[in-house]
Image (cartoon, rainbow over all chains, first blue to last red; front, side, top):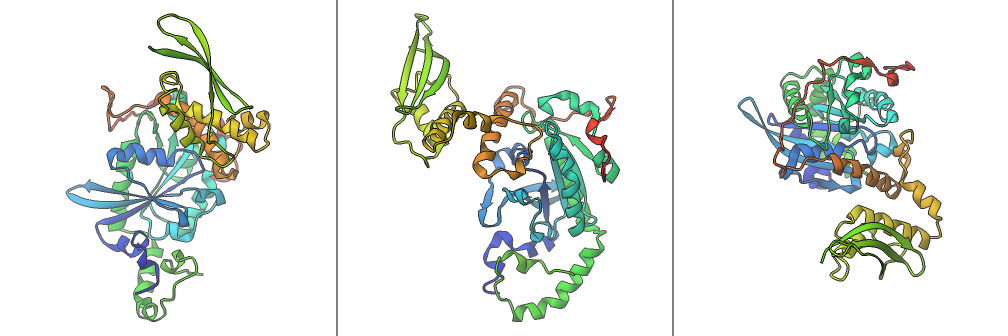
Amino acid sequence: MAGDVDSIPELDQKKYDADEQVKIICLGDSAVGKSKLMERFLMDEYRPQQLSTYALTLYKHTASVGNKTVLVDFWDTAGQERFQSMHPSYYHKAHACIMVFDVQRKITYKNLATWYKELREFRPEIPCCVVANKIDADLKVTQRSFNFGKKQGLPLYYVSAADGTNVVKMFRDMIKRAVEYKQNPSDFMDEVMQELENFDLEKKEENSEPDEDGLKAESPELD
Amino acid sequence: MSFEAKRCGVQFSPPSIVLIYQHRDTKKVRKRIIPVRNFFKHSDCSRAAEKLKNNPRHRDYLDSVTCSQLEKLHVILQDQMKGLSLEHSLASFHLDPEEDLNKLDDQELNRKKGQMDELFEKNRRHKDDPDFVYDLEMDFTKTMQDKCSWDEESDDGF
């Protein structure tokens, strides 16, 4: 298939259909510490791949879940959050979502509602968590209950990318949940998509014209 | 010979970084004016700061001055070259917890991030630290939890 996004191997999202691959996305406002969390979790493995055309950063990670090896792609926003909205392909085929806010800035907490709403438009059922970052700035915040997560039935993690508190635990939990979700997807949309893709395959082969912004070609839209 | 930086600042004309430092042995306090060369309106401030920090003629004096502080001084010098006021430069470093940082452009955002990085670096545990634990876990769910005032104005979802 010449000419479509397959020419950018990083963005070939079909690979996320393979059993041993999961895609985990990060959401949250500018400067809440999303990249710093990735860096703390990955340590020496930390090799961000900047795809600046798409305002996107990818991190690859190999994890063990049970006795299986899982390849994890973390998707980070690289400034796309500025538009208060992400491109649909960002959500496409994601298996879990990490939503981050900064405990020192109320607005980043309030904006979780917007991020969560958009996430659920595209991925109604994938596992998601709320991360309260920068607790090292003032440990007292851990005595406060941030109700947003609770109301939506999402686990809340108090973390610090600086001193490392609960960072690894949070990521390991989310990788595990992503794998579980993948093995047993409850998203009706996933099944519909699967059906549509199988159905569309032949048609797609014929008219695989490069889309204007490339990314879109991978995400069939359902109106 | 070793020196301890006491204060630093800028001088606009000619663009220079001013350093007040003390000789560790003699305890004498001196002033050093470091002219900033080959630095223009569109130069990269962080690279310029790093270059200055490693400059063989100045590095001993700048030993206790952090790269981020030198970068900040370069930003102030550059703002002045662009015709911006000192007040503007200083305000751009100020962190306002109510400000929506999503609305800033890259450069403005980086200034705020630079400020946040100071606290980050201060609290940071490096993997070479003797007491470093990779998987550091703390359970906060058992502590008494107060209601969070951020939840009070109950708009949708909070």
